[in-house]
Image 1: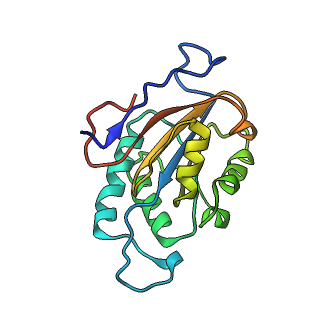
Image 2: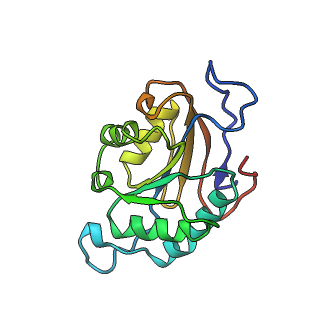
Length: 186
């Protein structure tokens, strides 16, 4: 069984058929596996060796998926920032980053508020953070249970502005994590 899954969900009613990308694409990325051995404060925990191996694989998938990331909103936690650095290194052109303290150890509702406040000029945004908030947000937006173990991501798309996140019908376009990819990203 593959760790990668590409959703076959039906596009929500009202979506333009044949459209290559939804108007808004949110990529929820859970940080890679962290190292608990050092006794650091939670916010300072580094990546474990497994996390350092997995994050670039996620980056490679995202960089070849056809999503043009306009912005990365990243938790200030060391493991989240290190994950994004390894993911972003796989892109030909590194997407802009905004370290957002409100992403750290927060609820799905607070994460949804961050998404709803994104600038209208952004079409594809990656949010790098933590569970349970990320899983809960993915599940709420997609309308189906979404599992986000370390280094996993969920790609969710909808028509409408960022401010409509959670109100407009959305589709889970892809989800998964390394190391195996048995299905093309799109």
